[in-house]
Picture 1 (cartoon, rainbow, N blue to C red):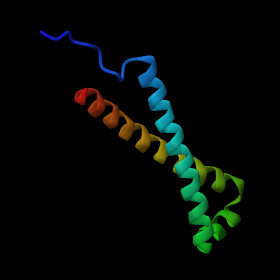
Picture 2 (cartoon, one colour; picture 1 turned 90 degrees about the vertical axis):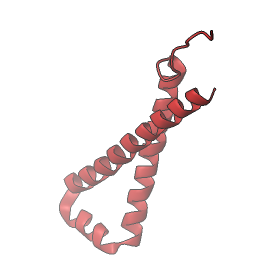
Picture 3 (cartoon, rainbow, N blue to C red; picture 1 turned 180 degrees about the vertical axis):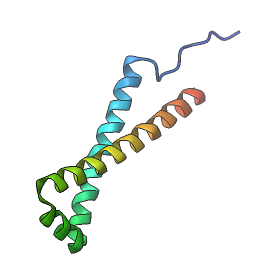
Length: 85
């Protein structure tokens, strides 16, 4: 009978992998926000007239959304990879 090992998610390497996925998601959110501002002048105009608070909310919303999505995707990848081995 094979020994039952703990999932890869509950370990130091699993935590590092999740932080890596979250960081990649945050960077992707920033790149998407920059591309959105450069491609759509209406967004740039809204951020320009909204002040620094609007820019902060815009950036934090995109970064948080993409980071959460990438972290959840990372969880799925880690669990599937763990199941295959």
